[in-house]
Image (tube, rainbow, N blue to C red; front, side):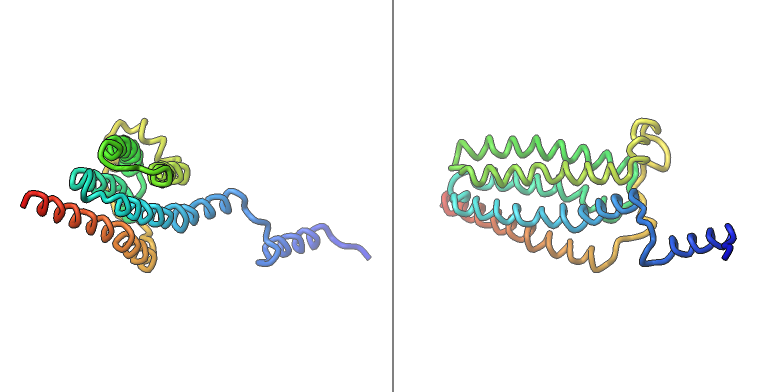
Length: 213
């Protein structure tokens, strides 16, 4: 029985395109996995050490030691981390957003060093708290690095466009992230970051007011 070349080629093409047997595209798989890890791994990981750090501050009696000053530095660091997160979730990733992420990550690290220098002179900073700080410091850098790798074409434009043109404007995403995901991230930030550290600031302000009475 003779099988024509054209018939064999047609069968091979049908086999390759079958959903269950389709050959995976490695680059697309890596990009998809990286994007999912950034969205569902790196960002939610911020919540756990943030709450743990707040617990450490409370146990060490921050309101009676470094007080309002250190709590204000904590609020500053949350702002430094929060602004690029909001930009990355809602704006088109371009040289402006990537530069914002990178600059904020470096600034956050410098502020974290200042925070520890303030704390160690006023209260006990235990090894566990220092270890928690290491997670909080590396997460902004990790998020910036993953985003840069996923948008390498835009990262190259940081040095090519010279800070000019449409690439250096805040623009809405062409394909916005799912509303459910944005709502979940917003709820996580509110419950695990904003609420605990607002409570810390209120506690420190009350302690300072009672001290001066």
